[in-house]
Figure 1 (cartoon, chains in turn blue, red):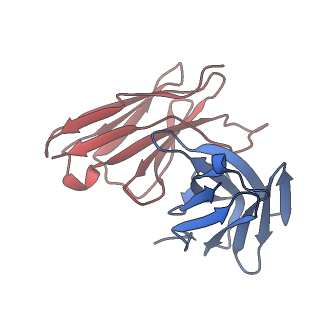
Figure 2 (cartoon, each protein chain N blue to C red):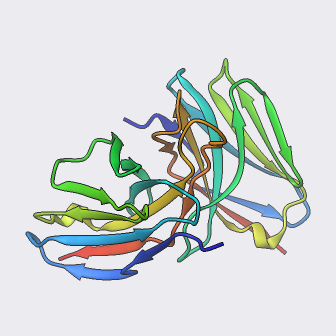
Length: 112
Length: 116
Protein backbone atom coordinates (compact mmCIF):
# COMPACT_ATOMS: atom_id res chain seq x y z
CA UNK A 1 0.00 0.00 0.00
CA UNK A 2 1.93 2.96 -1.34
CA UNK A 3 0.66 5.99 0.59
CA UNK A 4 3.33 8.31 -0.80
CA UNK A 5 4.11 8.22 -4.50
CA UNK A 6 6.76 9.78 -6.64
CA UNK A 7 5.68 8.95 -10.15
CA UNK A 8 8.76 10.25 -11.95
CA UNK A 9 11.70 7.89 -11.43
CA UNK A 10 14.07 10.36 -13.06
CA UNK A 11 14.39 13.99 -14.13
CA UNK A 12 17.05 15.68 -16.22
CA UNK A 13 17.53 19.46 -16.06
CA UNK A 14 20.05 21.92 -17.45
CA UNK A 15 22.25 23.77 -14.96
CA UNK A 16 20.72 27.11 -13.98
CA UNK A 17 17.16 26.07 -14.79
CA UNK A 18 14.40 25.10 -12.38
CA UNK A 19 13.99 21.52 -11.16
CA UNK A 20 10.50 20.51 -10.06
CA UNK A 21 10.08 17.24 -8.21
CA UNK A 22 6.59 16.02 -7.47
CA UNK A 23 5.06 13.87 -4.77
CA UNK A 24 1.49 12.66 -4.21
CA UNK A 25 -0.04 11.13 -1.11
CA UNK A 26 -3.27 9.35 -0.34
CA UNK A 27 -3.65 9.65 3.44
CA UNK A 28 -5.49 12.83 4.41
CA UNK A 29 -4.18 12.43 7.98
CA UNK A 30 -0.64 13.28 6.88
CA UNK A 31 0.27 16.64 8.35
CA UNK A 32 4.04 16.86 8.13
CA UNK A 33 6.16 16.42 5.04
CA UNK A 34 9.88 16.31 4.42
CA UNK A 35 12.22 16.12 1.47
CA UNK A 36 15.47 14.19 1.64
CA UNK A 37 18.40 14.03 -0.76
CA UNK A 38 20.51 10.91 -1.15
CA UNK A 39 23.89 10.52 -2.79
CA UNK A 40 25.20 7.02 -3.61
CA UNK A 41 26.77 5.22 -0.63
CA UNK A 42 25.44 7.84 1.79
CA UNK A 43 22.39 8.01 4.01
CA UNK A 44 19.56 10.40 3.11
CA UNK A 45 20.11 13.97 4.28
CA UNK A 46 17.32 16.32 5.27
CA UNK A 47 16.55 19.17 2.86
CA UNK A 48 13.37 20.94 3.81
CA UNK A 49 10.07 20.32 5.57
CA UNK A 50 6.55 21.69 5.57
CA UNK A 51 3.69 21.42 8.00
CA UNK A 52 0.10 21.12 6.79
CA UNK A 53 -0.72 24.52 8.30
CA UNK A 54 1.42 26.10 5.55
CA UNK A 55 1.28 25.90 1.79
CA UNK A 56 4.83 27.03 1.11
CA UNK A 57 8.21 26.88 2.80
CA UNK A 58 11.39 28.35 1.40
CA UNK A 59 15.03 27.78 2.25
CA UNK A 60 17.55 29.34 -0.10
CA UNK A 61 17.29 27.69 -3.50
CA UNK A 62 14.76 25.16 -2.25
CA UNK A 63 11.02 25.77 -1.97
CA UNK A 64 8.39 23.20 -1.07
CA UNK A 65 4.75 23.76 -2.03
CA UNK A 66 1.88 21.86 -0.45
CA UNK A 67 -1.57 21.53 -2.02
CA UNK A 68 -3.67 19.78 0.60
CA UNK A 69 -6.82 19.55 -1.49
CA UNK A 70 -4.91 17.78 -4.24
CA UNK A 71 -2.77 15.83 -1.77
CA UNK A 72 0.26 16.95 -3.69
CA UNK A 73 3.56 18.52 -2.82
CA UNK A 74 6.42 19.66 -4.96
CA UNK A 75 10.03 20.66 -4.44
CA UNK A 76 11.42 23.47 -6.57
CA UNK A 77 15.15 23.97 -6.91
CA UNK A 78 16.19 27.27 -8.47
CA UNK A 79 18.74 27.59 -9.93
CA UNK A 80 19.70 23.94 -10.30
CA UNK A 81 23.37 23.07 -9.89
CA UNK A 82 25.31 19.92 -10.90
CA UNK A 83 25.87 19.19 -7.20
CA UNK A 84 22.11 18.81 -6.82
CA UNK A 85 22.30 15.58 -8.84
CA UNK A 86 21.03 12.93 -6.41
CA UNK A 87 17.96 10.88 -5.56
CA UNK A 88 15.23 12.91 -3.86
CA UNK A 89 12.70 11.31 -1.52
CA UNK A 90 9.57 12.85 -0.12
CA UNK A 91 8.25 11.56 3.20
CA UNK A 92 5.08 12.13 5.19
CA UNK A 93 3.84 11.47 8.70
CA UNK A 94 0.52 11.75 10.53
CA UNK A 95 -0.21 13.30 13.92
CA UNK A 96 3.19 12.60 15.35
CA UNK A 97 6.71 11.97 14.19
CA UNK A 98 6.57 8.32 14.97
CA UNK A 99 6.53 6.87 11.50
CA UNK A 100 7.40 8.33 8.12
CA UNK A 101 6.15 7.01 4.80
CA UNK A 102 8.61 7.53 1.96
CA UNK A 103 8.10 7.73 -1.76
CA UNK A 104 10.23 5.63 -4.09
CA UNK A 105 12.44 8.56 -5.05
CA UNK A 106 13.22 10.66 -8.12
CA UNK A 107 16.73 10.66 -9.53
CA UNK A 108 17.66 14.20 -10.54
CA UNK A 109 20.44 14.78 -13.05
CA UNK A 110 21.57 18.37 -13.48
CA UNK A 111 23.61 18.72 -16.64
CA UNK A 112 26.43 21.32 -16.79
CA UNK B 1 28.68 16.80 17.07
CA UNK B 2 28.89 13.09 16.22
CA UNK B 3 26.49 11.91 13.53
CA UNK B 4 24.65 8.62 13.22
CA UNK B 5 26.98 5.69 12.72
CA UNK B 6 26.03 2.18 11.65
CA UNK B 7 27.90 -1.10 11.59
CA UNK B 8 28.69 -3.19 9.73
CA UNK B 9 28.49 -1.33 6.41
CA UNK B 10 28.22 -4.50 4.35
CA UNK B 11 27.54 -8.11 5.20
CA UNK B 12 26.57 -11.34 3.51
CA UNK B 13 24.46 -14.01 5.17
CA UNK B 14 22.72 -17.18 4.04
CA UNK B 15 19.06 -18.04 4.33
CA UNK B 16 18.00 -19.08 7.82
CA UNK B 17 20.83 -17.26 9.57
CA UNK B 18 20.45 -14.43 12.04
CA UNK B 19 21.91 -10.93 11.81
CA UNK B 20 22.46 -8.05 14.22
CA UNK B 21 22.92 -4.50 12.94
CA UNK B 22 24.08 -1.69 15.19
CA UNK B 23 23.47 2.03 15.32
CA UNK B 24 24.84 4.87 17.41
CA UNK B 25 22.49 7.83 17.47
CA UNK B 26 23.51 11.42 17.02
CA UNK B 27 24.60 13.20 20.17
CA UNK B 28 21.58 14.54 22.06
CA UNK B 29 19.04 12.34 20.30
CA UNK B 30 16.93 9.89 22.28
CA UNK B 31 14.88 8.35 19.48
CA UNK B 32 16.05 5.80 16.94
CA UNK B 33 14.09 4.56 13.94
CA UNK B 34 14.99 1.71 11.60
CA UNK B 35 14.09 1.61 7.92
CA UNK B 36 14.52 -1.01 5.22
CA UNK B 37 15.29 0.21 1.72
CA UNK B 38 15.01 -2.38 -1.02
CA UNK B 39 16.63 -1.71 -4.38
CA UNK B 40 14.75 0.97 -6.32
CA UNK B 41 12.37 1.68 -3.44
CA UNK B 42 12.07 4.27 -0.74
CA UNK B 43 12.83 3.51 2.90
CA UNK B 44 10.14 1.50 4.71
CA UNK B 45 9.56 2.00 8.43
CA UNK B 46 10.42 -1.06 10.55
CA UNK B 47 10.12 0.33 14.08
CA UNK B 48 11.12 3.13 16.39
CA UNK B 49 12.59 3.20 19.87
CA UNK B 50 12.16 6.05 22.30
CA UNK B 51 13.85 5.91 25.68
CA UNK B 52 14.44 2.17 25.35
CA UNK B 53 10.82 1.32 24.55
CA UNK B 54 9.39 0.35 21.17
CA UNK B 55 7.33 3.32 20.01
CA UNK B 56 5.62 2.17 16.85
CA UNK B 57 6.13 -0.63 14.37
CA UNK B 58 5.66 -0.98 10.65
CA UNK B 59 4.39 -3.96 8.69
CA UNK B 60 7.29 -6.30 9.45
CA UNK B 61 7.09 -9.81 10.96
CA UNK B 62 8.16 -10.56 14.54
CA UNK B 63 11.47 -12.01 13.37
CA UNK B 64 12.49 -8.34 13.04
CA UNK B 65 13.24 -7.18 16.56
CA UNK B 66 15.17 -4.40 18.18
CA UNK B 67 16.68 -2.94 21.28
CA UNK B 68 17.64 0.47 22.50
CA UNK B 69 20.26 0.90 25.20
CA UNK B 70 20.54 3.54 27.95
CA UNK B 71 23.01 5.51 25.83
CA UNK B 72 20.32 5.53 23.07
CA UNK B 73 22.29 3.33 20.70
CA UNK B 74 20.24 0.61 19.09
CA UNK B 75 20.31 -2.83 17.51
CA UNK B 76 18.18 -4.39 14.80
CA UNK B 77 18.00 -8.17 14.87
CA UNK B 78 16.61 -10.28 12.07
CA UNK B 79 16.10 -14.00 12.58
CA UNK B 80 15.53 -16.75 10.02
CA UNK B 81 16.81 -14.60 7.16
CA UNK B 82 15.00 -14.80 3.84
CA UNK B 83 16.22 -13.81 0.39
CA UNK B 84 13.82 -10.83 0.37
CA UNK B 85 15.54 -9.43 3.45
CA UNK B 86 18.39 -8.32 1.18
CA UNK B 87 18.30 -4.54 1.43
CA UNK B 88 19.93 -1.43 2.82
CA UNK B 89 19.02 -1.02 6.48
CA UNK B 90 18.97 2.59 7.58
CA UNK B 91 19.06 3.86 11.12
CA UNK B 92 17.81 7.36 11.84
CA UNK B 93 17.96 9.30 15.06
CA UNK B 94 15.86 12.23 16.15
CA UNK B 95 15.07 14.24 19.24
CA UNK B 96 11.77 12.81 20.42
CA UNK B 97 9.72 13.98 23.33
CA UNK B 98 7.28 16.79 23.75
CA UNK B 99 9.17 19.94 22.96
CA UNK B 100 11.49 20.92 20.18
CA UNK B 101 10.80 17.88 18.07
CA UNK B 102 11.01 18.99 14.47
CA UNK B 103 10.50 15.47 13.29
CA UNK B 104 13.64 15.65 11.20
CA UNK B 105 15.40 12.32 10.90
CA UNK B 106 19.17 12.13 10.77
CA UNK B 107 20.22 9.03 8.87
CA UNK B 108 23.33 6.91 9.01
CA UNK B 109 24.94 5.55 5.86
CA UNK B 110 23.21 2.22 6.26
CA UNK B 111 24.13 -1.44 6.48
CA UNK B 112 23.82 -3.32 3.21
CA UNK B 113 22.68 -6.87 3.85
CA UNK B 114 22.85 -9.55 1.17
CA UNK B 115 21.11 -12.85 1.84
CA UNK B 116 22.19 -15.76 -0.35
